[in-house]
Image (cartoon, rainbow, N blue to C red; front, side, top):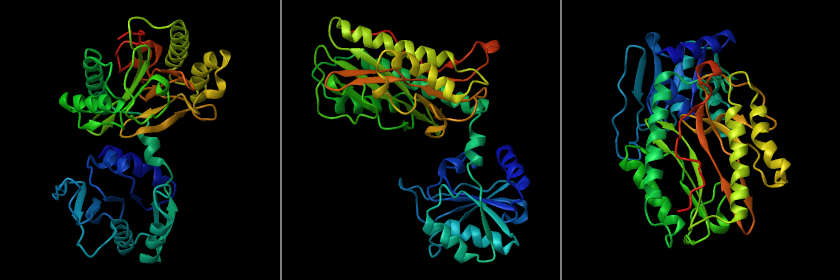
Length: 369
């Protein structure tokens, strides 16, 4: 597979002879397989020129025990029940093939697991692969972007249907469960992350867990959700007002957050520093006196994970590339009153191609529901 070949070129240039990938999202990216507990060995440890996916003997959580099938360039092996850790088996396989230097994902391995690898193959020198796979995952190919577009379309449909229903009197928890059901009804494999519905004084809280508070007239209602489709995840966040018309303070706060979100979206061009995107979205809110209540970042990458690189924050280092999907999600929460969140998923595009591609298209008009 081309993705594994590109990765191999990177770690071979650093002097490594083989690599062990253990982070699940990275394994799925490199193989197309999602096997709980599996590890991927690339390099000389893959016998006969194959890379090797080693899976535990136990069936998966949903009862499916069938392993992925081997291909011309990927050997898939299910380990015997008496082999408790595929990573240890991979290290032993690499050592038996004569590998002297094995790169591992130290940021994913526990200390205990790292020690077990060293003990199982004492002649094998372990080095750090770092975040090489995550860096390669930053720029998405057209197949990945197509999956993200479908995930966004599903998410928009689910949210749109909710807005057509009666909301007053229903609990945050009930609305969150309904949204997740609608995601699946429209073709999602599930929610991309736990759906957040927050009303009244809870509105605008980042990562609010839906509770038993009921929607009331005059509330802000913030909703944050996303669909999981073929492994890829998107995110949308919207804020609405319950009742015939928003109050003046609600209009003022909403317009401010909307302006901040628009500034962040417009900054999503190739070559722009991550922190400059954050600064563009953060500046209007800081100028209005809300700097002390802002989150540590105003956006992040999406793909096989929610919250992957790049981080759009004041201290983030690096510049945007084209075809990198990110969120822009400023928000303000006023304790005791509530607040506003507006989140979108976009793909970085140059101005010559029309600028940032907006994937989540549900209206950002302040609707009174």
